Length: 478
Image (cartoon, rainbow, N blue to C red):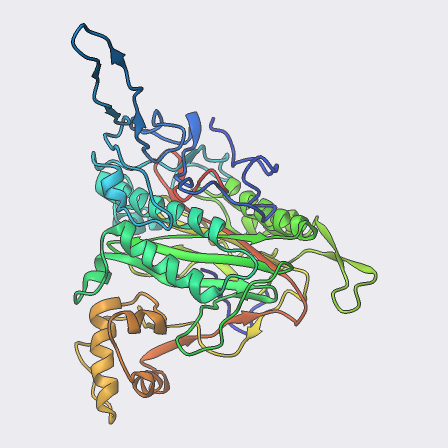
């Protein structure tokens, strides 16, 4: 989930899956992974702790043994079929859309490790500064087994949900259907419908599901009662969604299309994201990542046919979008204070630090590369800068009641109107507008480039561990 910048701002393991068509064409945008795949099985370099020996499909699949017939003088006897269990102990396989809780597919309770990558050589001494060491003491221990397992659990939910999306989303499908299916799948895979007071704070959606088409670059989701959007064969769809367990959010995004003319746009953005991931690590200067991201992305061009008169074509340089950024993540805070721009900028000395979690993402466009607020609302969020009051007193009683519902069920997590209706809220719009107008809630708008342009996004969540970085959201798709 991209972090919008203020209006006055300018600005020994194998690598990622290959960009060839053999990698399910997510970079090319067509025909995602096979149904039920998307488990993030990373081969010999992708897992640790005994998980990388799992079946190639990653998700355990039952195999039925052959039926053997034996003859005797009296009758033939049939041996009972036996179901082989995979090495993680499960004999189940995932449904489509996903509905079997991930914990049931991994009964041992140990989830797949993300891609482990060595750190690049540090630009400076490996000795941390005193200030960085002191800040590290206030963070959750990133090597804590429970923390890591929760993050990997959430990542598996993300992989299996997006595998379904990559098969289901196609021309003629409505985005309301995609969003509803994703929300339902996430809750089912977590085995938490999120209906009890506070249960959505234990696990659930990390932020509203983002489904952005063409010039809409970020922060758009279907709203109840709003006009539905139906995909067409010439659309470019970016899918950005989060899954959290105990407030730790896996934030990952990808782009798909159904027309090969957009392949270079998608490839440029995906390669730019990988460039950022490659340089990330403790003591890495964020300015260095930004420079590499922009250089990689803007080395690409894309030639698109004219859609207005079906004659001629035009070549565009892929531009890095300037006023939205990647970001670090903290517990129940999707944007935790540090930003990773996609354009080169003056080095202010900001560095990454050991123990931090980052969403390394990039946005590219054939448009101007500067986003403005679009129509409607994407989502809402309570401020995470200070403790939330137990209650508020506004003139509108429904606003006070709605505040309690939001605080008890979402805390500082962002949410959409669709999530309020999932909780059974009715006639809430007046209260919602009152909370926004009084500055208690922040309303997030869709972010769009110029009409007729095309945008793309790719994103991964990485953990800056003691001796390596873990791309926890990595999968076979991207």
